Figure 1 (cartoon, rainbow, N blue to C red):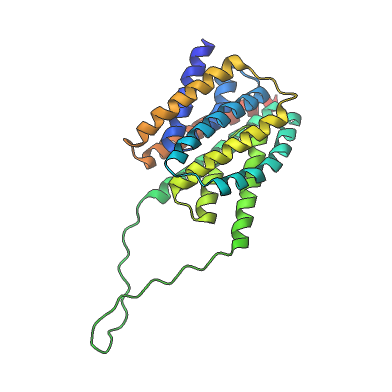
Figure 2: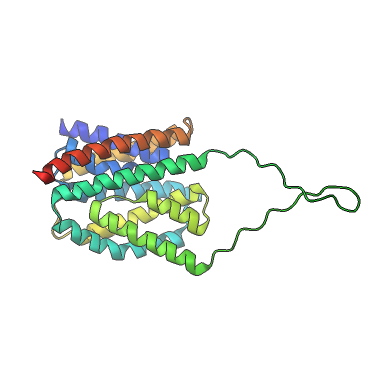
Length: 278
Protein backbone atom coordinates (compact mmCIF):
# COMPACT_ATOMS: atom_id res chain seq x y z
CA UNK A 1 0.00 0.00 0.00
CA UNK A 2 2.88 2.35 0.80
CA UNK A 3 4.35 1.74 -2.66
CA UNK A 4 1.01 2.53 -4.32
CA UNK A 5 0.74 5.82 -2.41
CA UNK A 6 4.35 6.73 -3.24
CA UNK A 7 3.68 6.17 -6.93
CA UNK A 8 0.40 8.10 -6.91
CA UNK A 9 1.80 11.06 -4.98
CA UNK A 10 4.97 11.13 -7.05
CA UNK A 11 2.96 11.35 -10.26
CA UNK A 12 0.79 14.14 -8.81
CA UNK A 13 3.78 16.21 -7.74
CA UNK A 14 5.64 15.64 -11.00
CA UNK A 15 2.46 16.55 -12.88
CA UNK A 16 2.25 19.92 -11.12
CA UNK A 17 5.96 20.55 -11.66
CA UNK A 18 5.71 19.74 -15.35
CA UNK A 19 2.53 21.76 -15.89
CA UNK A 20 3.54 24.83 -13.87
CA UNK A 21 7.33 24.74 -14.09
CA UNK A 22 7.67 24.81 -10.32
CA UNK A 23 5.81 24.71 -7.04
CA UNK A 24 4.99 21.00 -6.96
CA UNK A 25 7.99 20.13 -4.85
CA UNK A 26 6.57 21.98 -1.86
CA UNK A 27 3.95 19.22 -1.48
CA UNK A 28 6.59 16.50 -1.17
CA UNK A 29 7.24 16.86 2.58
CA UNK A 30 3.54 16.87 3.63
CA UNK A 31 2.94 13.85 1.39
CA UNK A 32 5.85 11.96 2.95
CA UNK A 33 4.83 12.87 6.52
CA UNK A 34 1.04 12.64 6.53
CA UNK A 35 0.39 10.00 3.87
CA UNK A 36 3.47 7.78 3.95
CA UNK A 37 4.19 8.16 7.67
CA UNK A 38 7.78 9.42 7.39
CA UNK A 39 9.28 11.35 10.36
CA UNK A 40 9.59 15.07 9.65
CA UNK A 41 13.38 15.19 9.37
CA UNK A 42 13.55 12.04 7.26
CA UNK A 43 10.85 13.56 5.02
CA UNK A 44 12.87 16.74 4.44
CA UNK A 45 15.90 14.60 3.53
CA UNK A 46 13.91 12.38 1.18
CA UNK A 47 12.36 15.49 -0.34
CA UNK A 48 15.83 16.79 -1.26
CA UNK A 49 16.50 13.64 -3.30
CA UNK A 50 13.10 13.70 -5.00
CA UNK A 51 13.15 17.45 -5.67
CA UNK A 52 16.80 17.56 -6.74
CA UNK A 53 16.59 14.72 -9.26
CA UNK A 54 13.25 15.84 -10.69
CA UNK A 55 14.38 19.49 -10.97
CA UNK A 56 17.59 18.62 -12.81
CA UNK A 57 15.81 16.32 -15.27
CA UNK A 58 13.24 19.05 -15.89
CA UNK A 59 16.05 21.61 -16.29
CA UNK A 60 17.63 19.47 -19.03
CA UNK A 61 14.33 19.50 -20.89
CA UNK A 62 14.17 23.29 -20.61
CA UNK A 63 17.81 23.54 -21.69
CA UNK A 64 17.05 21.70 -24.94
CA UNK A 65 14.48 24.43 -25.63
CA UNK A 66 17.11 27.12 -24.90
CA UNK A 67 15.40 28.23 -21.67
CA UNK A 68 18.30 27.81 -19.20
CA UNK A 69 20.93 30.49 -18.54
CA UNK A 70 23.79 28.39 -17.20
CA UNK A 71 26.11 31.15 -15.97
CA UNK A 72 23.58 33.06 -13.84
CA UNK A 73 21.95 29.79 -12.73
CA UNK A 74 25.25 28.33 -11.49
CA UNK A 75 26.10 31.61 -9.76
CA UNK A 76 22.68 31.81 -8.08
CA UNK A 77 23.01 28.19 -6.97
CA UNK A 78 26.54 28.71 -5.62
CA UNK A 79 25.31 31.59 -3.47
CA UNK A 80 22.58 29.38 -2.05
CA UNK A 81 25.04 26.61 -1.16
CA UNK A 82 26.48 28.82 1.59
CA UNK A 83 23.18 29.40 3.37
CA UNK A 84 21.95 25.84 2.76
CA UNK A 85 24.59 24.66 5.23
CA UNK A 86 23.08 26.85 7.97
CA UNK A 87 19.56 25.72 7.07
CA UNK A 88 20.62 22.08 7.30
CA UNK A 89 22.20 22.59 10.72
CA UNK A 90 19.04 24.29 12.01
CA UNK A 91 16.94 21.40 10.65
CA UNK A 92 18.87 19.01 12.90
CA UNK A 93 18.23 21.04 16.05
CA UNK A 94 14.63 22.26 15.84
CA UNK A 95 11.57 20.46 17.23
CA UNK A 96 9.83 18.38 14.55
CA UNK A 97 6.42 20.02 15.11
CA UNK A 98 7.96 23.49 14.94
CA UNK A 99 9.67 22.43 11.71
CA UNK A 100 6.31 21.48 10.23
CA UNK A 101 4.74 24.73 11.45
CA UNK A 102 7.44 26.63 9.58
CA UNK A 103 6.70 24.49 6.55
CA UNK A 104 2.98 25.31 6.76
CA UNK A 105 3.79 29.03 6.86
CA UNK A 106 6.02 28.64 3.81
CA UNK A 107 3.22 26.88 1.92
CA UNK A 108 0.83 29.75 2.58
CA UNK A 109 3.48 32.28 1.45
CA UNK A 110 4.09 30.24 -1.70
CA UNK A 111 0.34 30.11 -2.43
CA UNK A 112 0.15 33.90 -2.14
CA UNK A 113 3.12 34.31 -4.48
CA UNK A 114 1.53 31.99 -7.04
CA UNK A 115 -1.76 33.87 -6.92
CA UNK A 116 0.08 37.15 -7.52
CA UNK A 117 1.83 35.59 -10.51
CA UNK A 118 -1.52 34.38 -11.85
CA UNK A 119 -2.92 37.91 -11.63
CA UNK A 120 0.17 39.29 -13.35
CA UNK A 121 -0.38 36.93 -16.31
CA UNK A 122 -3.77 38.46 -17.13
CA UNK A 123 -3.39 40.75 -20.14
CA UNK A 124 -4.04 44.39 -19.28
CA UNK A 125 -6.41 46.38 -21.50
CA UNK A 126 -4.52 48.53 -24.01
CA UNK A 127 -4.00 52.09 -22.82
CA UNK A 128 -5.17 54.87 -25.14
CA UNK A 129 -2.25 56.56 -26.90
CA UNK A 130 -1.10 59.83 -25.39
CA UNK A 131 -1.37 62.68 -27.85
CA UNK A 132 0.74 65.80 -28.05
CA UNK A 133 -0.74 69.18 -28.98
CA UNK A 134 -1.11 69.73 -32.67
CA UNK A 135 2.06 70.82 -34.46
CA UNK A 136 2.43 73.67 -36.88
CA UNK A 137 0.78 71.68 -39.63
CA UNK A 138 -2.20 70.88 -37.39
CA UNK A 139 -1.23 67.15 -37.17
CA UNK A 140 -1.28 65.41 -33.82
CA UNK A 141 1.69 63.15 -33.03
CA UNK A 142 1.84 60.26 -30.62
CA UNK A 143 4.04 60.80 -27.59
CA UNK A 144 6.69 58.22 -26.89
CA UNK A 145 6.47 56.59 -23.45
CA UNK A 146 9.07 57.75 -20.99
CA UNK A 147 11.88 55.22 -20.58
CA UNK A 148 11.89 53.26 -17.33
CA UNK A 149 14.61 54.28 -14.89
CA UNK A 150 17.70 52.13 -15.34
CA UNK A 151 18.46 49.68 -12.55
CA UNK A 152 22.06 49.63 -11.48
CA UNK A 153 24.07 46.45 -11.77
CA UNK A 154 24.86 46.64 -8.06
CA UNK A 155 21.19 46.72 -7.06
CA UNK A 156 20.46 43.75 -9.31
CA UNK A 157 23.39 41.79 -7.92
CA UNK A 158 22.26 42.46 -4.35
CA UNK A 159 18.71 41.29 -5.08
CA UNK A 160 19.92 38.12 -6.75
CA UNK A 161 22.38 37.43 -3.92
CA UNK A 162 19.70 37.94 -1.26
CA UNK A 163 17.23 35.69 -3.09
CA UNK A 164 19.96 33.06 -3.50
CA UNK A 165 20.73 33.09 0.22
CA UNK A 166 17.03 32.82 1.17
CA UNK A 167 16.41 29.95 -1.24
CA UNK A 168 19.51 28.09 -0.12
CA UNK A 169 18.50 28.40 3.52
CA UNK A 170 14.95 27.16 2.83
CA UNK A 171 16.28 24.23 0.83
CA UNK A 172 18.56 23.16 3.66
CA UNK A 173 16.03 23.82 6.40
CA UNK A 174 12.80 22.50 4.88
CA UNK A 175 13.87 20.41 1.89
CA UNK A 176 12.02 22.56 -0.65
CA UNK A 177 13.12 23.96 -3.98
CA UNK A 178 12.06 27.58 -3.47
CA UNK A 179 11.09 28.14 -7.09
CA UNK A 180 8.39 30.59 -5.99
CA UNK A 181 11.25 32.88 -4.86
CA UNK A 182 13.78 32.12 -7.60
CA UNK A 183 11.45 32.73 -10.54
CA UNK A 184 10.29 36.25 -9.50
CA UNK A 185 13.89 37.15 -8.59
CA UNK A 186 15.11 36.22 -12.06
CA UNK A 187 12.21 38.02 -13.74
CA UNK A 188 12.47 41.24 -11.72
CA UNK A 189 16.23 41.46 -11.23
CA UNK A 190 17.58 40.10 -14.52
CA UNK A 191 14.59 40.81 -16.75
CA UNK A 192 14.20 37.18 -17.87
CA UNK A 193 10.98 36.17 -19.63
CA UNK A 194 9.00 33.57 -17.71
CA UNK A 195 10.11 30.43 -19.66
CA UNK A 196 13.80 31.29 -19.13
CA UNK A 197 13.24 32.18 -15.45
CA UNK A 198 11.49 28.83 -14.87
CA UNK A 199 14.17 26.81 -16.68
CA UNK A 200 17.02 28.56 -14.86
CA UNK A 201 15.26 28.23 -11.50
CA UNK A 202 15.13 24.45 -11.92
CA UNK A 203 18.93 24.41 -12.29
CA UNK A 204 19.23 26.47 -9.10
CA UNK A 205 16.86 24.13 -7.22
CA UNK A 206 18.89 21.08 -8.27
CA UNK A 207 22.18 22.64 -7.13
CA UNK A 208 20.80 23.67 -3.74
CA UNK A 209 19.13 20.30 -3.18
CA UNK A 210 22.30 18.30 -3.74
CA UNK A 211 24.40 20.73 -1.70
CA UNK A 212 22.02 20.22 1.24
CA UNK A 213 22.14 16.46 0.72
CA UNK A 214 25.93 16.52 0.87
CA UNK A 215 25.72 18.32 4.21
CA UNK A 216 23.31 15.68 5.59
CA UNK A 217 25.00 12.64 4.08
CA UNK A 218 26.85 11.55 7.21
CA UNK A 219 23.93 11.73 9.63
CA UNK A 220 20.66 11.46 7.68
CA UNK A 221 18.63 8.31 7.12
CA UNK A 222 17.42 7.60 3.60
CA UNK A 223 14.33 5.43 3.21
CA UNK A 224 15.07 4.27 -0.35
CA UNK A 225 12.04 2.00 -0.52
CA UNK A 226 9.94 5.18 -0.48
CA UNK A 227 12.31 7.65 -2.15
CA UNK A 228 13.10 5.64 -5.30
CA UNK A 229 9.51 4.86 -6.45
CA UNK A 230 8.40 8.37 -5.46
CA UNK A 231 11.18 9.92 -7.56
CA UNK A 232 10.53 7.69 -10.59
CA UNK A 233 6.80 8.46 -10.42
CA UNK A 234 7.54 12.20 -10.15
CA UNK A 235 9.69 12.00 -13.29
CA UNK A 236 6.85 10.24 -15.14
CA UNK A 237 4.40 12.88 -13.91
CA UNK A 238 6.79 15.57 -15.10
CA UNK A 239 6.38 14.51 -18.73
CA UNK A 240 2.61 14.13 -18.35
CA UNK A 241 2.44 17.64 -16.90
CA UNK A 242 4.23 19.14 -19.88
CA UNK A 243 1.51 17.75 -22.13
CA UNK A 244 -1.16 19.14 -19.82
CA UNK A 245 0.41 22.59 -19.91
CA UNK A 246 -0.41 22.95 -23.59
CA UNK A 247 -4.10 22.17 -23.06
CA UNK A 248 -5.04 24.10 -19.91
CA UNK A 249 -4.56 27.79 -19.15
CA UNK A 250 -1.47 28.44 -16.99
CA UNK A 251 -3.51 30.92 -14.95
CA UNK A 252 -6.20 28.34 -14.18
CA UNK A 253 -3.59 25.72 -13.24
CA UNK A 254 -1.75 28.16 -10.99
CA UNK A 255 -4.91 29.22 -9.16
CA UNK A 256 -6.00 25.63 -8.65
CA UNK A 257 -2.61 24.64 -7.32
CA UNK A 258 -2.45 27.70 -5.03
CA UNK A 259 -5.82 26.68 -3.57
CA UNK A 260 -4.45 23.19 -2.93
CA UNK A 261 -1.40 24.68 -1.20
CA UNK A 262 -3.62 26.76 1.07
CA UNK A 263 -5.72 23.74 2.04
CA UNK A 264 -2.69 21.53 2.71
CA UNK A 265 -0.85 24.35 4.49
CA UNK A 266 -3.75 24.91 6.88
CA UNK A 267 -3.99 21.17 7.54
CA UNK A 268 -0.26 20.96 8.32
CA UNK A 269 -0.49 24.03 10.56
CA UNK A 270 -3.36 22.55 12.58
CA UNK A 271 -1.76 19.11 12.95
CA UNK A 272 1.68 20.39 13.85
CA UNK A 273 0.27 23.14 16.08
CA UNK A 274 -1.67 20.55 18.11
CA UNK A 275 1.46 18.40 18.36
CA UNK A 276 3.63 21.33 19.41
CA UNK A 277 1.14 22.52 22.05
CA UNK A 278 0.73 19.00 23.42
